[in-house]
Image 1: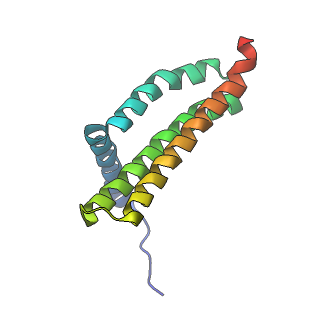
Image 2 (image 1 turned 135 degrees about the vertical axis):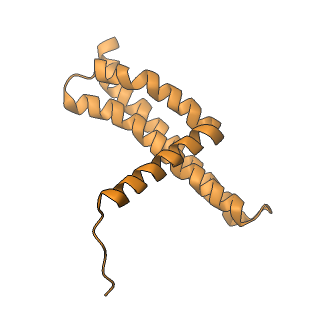
Length: 123
């Protein structure tokens, strides 16, 4: 069995830097991520303000974070598929479509969470 070295401060710092590089790359190269990022910057504070209690705040704000996380995963899927080759392949198209569908489902989740929590207060 291979030994696993414990993660020390140096490895944690490297992982932190790589994560920030990934966020920067997504912001620089992915228009969808930028759009969703702007929405996040507006709606996250609104969710903290309008949420009554911790659970509502987590649902309102967490649903927004999930969209960003899945957009990062979708962009990674697309980058890998594009790296493999530029020619069309049914499986490559399916992988890209499924990643996009996952983002869409999480956007529906945002609408569901926000609608069920805030909707009754508006009517």
